[in-house]
Amino acid sequence: MKPWKTLSRKTAFAPNPFLKVELHSVELPNGRVIDDWTWIEVPEYANILARTPRGTFLCFRQIKYAVPVPSLAPPGGYLEPGEDPLAAAKRELQEETGFVSDEWHPLGSYVVDSNRGAGKAHLFLALNARDVGGKLDDDLEEQELLHLTREDLEQALDQGKIPVLGFATLIGLGFRRLDQPLKYT
Image 1 (tube, rainbow, N blue to C red):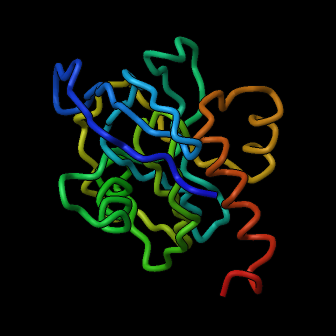
Image 2: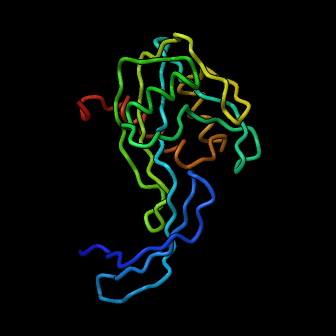
Protein backbone atom coordinates (compact mmCIF):
# COMPACT_ATOMS: atom_id res chain seq x y z
CA MET A 1 0.00 0.00 0.00
CA LYS A 2 1.19 3.49 -0.80
CA PRO A 3 0.61 6.48 1.49
CA TRP A 4 -1.31 9.58 0.52
CA LYS A 5 0.91 12.37 -0.79
CA THR A 6 0.57 15.98 0.38
CA LEU A 7 0.88 18.26 -2.65
CA SER A 8 0.27 21.57 -0.88
CA ARG A 9 -1.00 23.02 2.36
CA LYS A 10 -2.35 26.38 3.43
CA THR A 11 -3.46 27.69 6.79
CA ALA A 12 -7.19 28.33 6.93
CA PHE A 13 -7.53 29.22 10.62
CA ALA A 14 -5.01 29.66 13.43
CA PRO A 15 -6.51 31.62 16.34
CA ASN A 16 -3.94 30.59 18.98
CA PRO A 17 -0.99 28.24 19.64
CA PHE A 18 -3.39 25.40 20.50
CA LEU A 19 -5.20 25.11 17.15
CA LYS A 20 -4.38 25.41 13.48
CA VAL A 21 -6.66 24.25 10.68
CA GLU A 22 -5.04 23.68 7.31
CA LEU A 23 -6.41 22.85 3.88
CA HIS A 24 -4.28 20.30 2.07
CA SER A 25 -4.23 19.20 -1.52
CA VAL A 26 -3.62 15.44 -1.36
CA GLU A 27 -2.96 12.79 -3.97
CA LEU A 28 -4.42 9.36 -3.27
CA PRO A 29 -2.47 6.20 -4.17
CA ASN A 30 -4.65 5.80 -7.30
CA GLY A 31 -3.62 9.27 -8.54
CA ARG A 32 -6.86 11.06 -7.67
CA VAL A 33 -6.27 14.55 -6.20
CA ILE A 34 -8.47 15.96 -3.47
CA ASP A 35 -8.27 19.68 -2.80
CA ASP A 36 -9.18 21.31 0.51
CA TRP A 37 -8.64 18.22 2.66
CA THR A 38 -9.08 19.48 6.22
CA TRP A 39 -6.10 18.92 8.52
CA ILE A 40 -6.14 19.85 12.22
CA GLU A 41 -3.00 20.62 14.19
CA VAL A 42 -3.04 20.72 17.98
CA PRO A 43 -0.11 20.20 20.36
CA GLU A 44 0.93 16.68 21.26
CA TYR A 45 0.03 15.65 24.79
CA ALA A 46 0.84 13.10 27.46
CA ASN A 47 -1.53 11.29 29.80
CA ILE A 48 -0.44 9.23 32.77
CA LEU A 49 -2.00 6.31 34.60
CA ALA A 50 -0.22 6.71 37.94
CA ARG A 51 -0.38 4.02 40.61
CA THR A 52 0.76 4.65 44.17
CA PRO A 53 2.59 2.11 46.38
CA ARG A 54 -0.78 1.42 48.07
CA GLY A 55 -2.12 0.25 44.70
CA THR A 56 -4.46 3.18 44.15
CA PHE A 57 -4.58 5.16 40.93
CA LEU A 58 -4.49 8.97 40.76
CA CYS A 59 -7.45 10.41 38.94
CA PHE A 60 -9.30 13.71 38.87
CA ARG A 61 -13.01 14.26 39.20
CA GLN A 62 -13.63 17.32 37.04
CA ILE A 63 -15.78 18.95 34.41
CA LYS A 64 -14.31 19.59 30.96
CA TYR A 65 -15.77 22.01 28.43
CA ALA A 66 -16.75 19.22 26.01
CA VAL A 67 -17.96 16.96 28.84
CA PRO A 68 -20.21 19.22 30.94
CA VAL A 69 -20.87 16.65 33.69
CA PRO A 70 -18.53 15.41 36.41
CA SER A 71 -16.23 12.75 34.96
CA LEU A 72 -12.92 11.10 35.74
CA ALA A 73 -9.64 12.03 34.07
CA PRO A 74 -6.00 11.03 34.50
CA PRO A 75 -3.22 13.59 34.94
CA GLY A 76 -1.71 14.93 31.75
CA GLY A 77 -1.30 17.86 29.44
CA TYR A 78 0.34 19.37 26.38
CA LEU A 79 4.00 18.95 25.54
CA GLU A 80 5.99 22.16 25.40
CA PRO A 81 7.60 22.85 21.99
CA GLY A 82 10.50 20.43 21.54
CA GLU A 83 9.79 18.62 24.82
CA ASP A 84 10.32 14.88 25.07
CA PRO A 85 7.04 13.04 25.77
CA LEU A 86 8.35 11.27 28.88
CA ALA A 87 9.75 14.52 30.26
CA ALA A 88 6.35 16.12 29.67
CA ALA A 89 4.57 13.24 31.42
CA LYS A 90 6.86 13.56 34.46
CA ARG A 91 6.37 17.34 34.54
CA GLU A 92 2.59 17.11 34.18
CA LEU A 93 2.26 14.45 36.88
CA GLN A 94 4.10 16.59 39.42
CA GLU A 95 2.51 19.90 38.37
CA GLU A 96 -1.02 18.52 38.50
CA THR A 97 -0.79 16.16 41.48
CA GLY A 98 2.43 16.80 43.41
CA PHE A 99 3.40 13.16 42.77
CA VAL A 100 6.54 11.78 41.11
CA SER A 101 7.58 8.31 40.00
CA ASP A 102 10.87 6.60 39.24
CA GLU A 103 9.22 3.73 37.34
CA TRP A 104 7.78 4.70 33.94
CA HIS A 105 6.38 2.44 31.25
CA PRO A 106 5.47 3.84 27.83
CA LEU A 107 2.11 2.58 26.57
CA GLY A 108 2.50 3.97 23.07
CA SER A 109 2.05 7.11 21.00
CA TYR A 110 -1.15 7.46 19.01
CA VAL A 111 -2.50 9.80 16.34
CA VAL A 112 -5.84 11.12 17.55
CA ASP A 113 -7.65 11.14 14.17
CA SER A 114 -6.28 8.98 11.37
CA ASN A 115 -7.56 11.22 8.56
CA ARG A 116 -7.49 14.70 10.11
CA GLY A 117 -4.48 14.60 12.45
CA ALA A 118 -5.70 16.39 15.57
CA GLY A 119 -2.49 15.81 17.50
CA LYS A 120 -0.74 12.86 19.03
CA ALA A 121 -1.26 11.25 22.42
CA HIS A 122 1.67 9.81 24.37
CA LEU A 123 0.44 7.42 27.06
CA PHE A 124 2.39 6.28 30.12
CA LEU A 125 2.04 4.07 33.17
CA ALA A 126 3.84 5.42 36.26
CA LEU A 127 4.26 2.98 39.15
CA ASN A 128 5.03 3.70 42.81
CA ALA A 129 3.99 7.33 42.43
CA ARG A 130 4.66 9.21 45.66
CA ASP A 131 3.62 12.63 46.90
CA VAL A 132 6.50 15.09 47.06
CA GLY A 133 4.45 18.27 46.86
CA GLY A 134 4.94 20.98 44.30
CA LYS A 135 1.44 20.81 42.81
CA LEU A 136 0.61 23.89 40.75
CA ASP A 137 -2.89 25.34 40.96
CA ASP A 138 -3.01 26.78 37.47
CA ASP A 139 -5.43 24.42 35.71
CA LEU A 140 -8.53 25.87 34.10
CA GLU A 141 -10.79 23.19 35.57
CA GLU A 142 -11.84 22.69 39.14
CA GLN A 143 -10.34 19.33 39.99
CA GLU A 144 -10.59 16.94 42.90
CA LEU A 145 -7.68 14.49 43.12
CA LEU A 146 -8.90 11.00 43.96
CA HIS A 147 -7.14 7.76 44.86
CA LEU A 148 -9.16 5.03 43.15
CA THR A 149 -8.79 1.27 43.12
CA ARG A 150 -8.62 -0.69 39.92
CA GLU A 151 -12.15 -1.87 40.63
CA ASP A 152 -13.30 1.75 41.00
CA LEU A 153 -11.81 2.62 37.59
CA GLU A 154 -13.25 -0.49 35.91
CA GLN A 155 -16.68 0.36 37.30
CA ALA A 156 -16.31 3.98 36.15
CA LEU A 157 -15.47 2.75 32.63
CA ASP A 158 -18.52 0.46 32.66
CA GLN A 159 -20.76 3.30 33.85
CA GLY A 160 -19.55 5.84 31.29
CA LYS A 161 -17.87 8.05 33.91
CA ILE A 162 -14.72 8.23 31.76
CA PRO A 163 -16.29 9.59 28.53
CA VAL A 164 -13.08 10.81 26.85
CA LEU A 165 -11.69 8.21 24.42
CA GLY A 166 -8.03 8.94 25.16
CA PHE A 167 -8.58 8.60 28.91
CA ALA A 168 -10.46 5.31 28.57
CA THR A 169 -7.75 4.03 26.19
CA LEU A 170 -5.00 4.95 28.66
CA ILE A 171 -6.69 3.04 31.47
CA GLY A 172 -7.31 -0.02 29.30
CA LEU A 173 -3.73 -0.09 28.03
CA GLY A 174 -2.37 0.51 31.53
CA PHE A 175 -4.37 -2.37 32.99
CA ARG A 176 -3.27 -4.58 30.10
CA ARG A 177 0.36 -3.71 30.85
CA LEU A 178 -0.12 -4.50 34.54
CA ASP A 179 -1.74 -7.85 33.71
CA GLN A 180 0.92 -8.97 31.22
CA PRO A 181 4.27 -7.64 32.48
CA LEU A 182 6.40 -10.33 30.87
CA LYS A 183 5.18 -9.43 27.39
CA TYR A 184 6.43 -5.85 27.73
CA THR A 185 9.83 -6.20 29.39
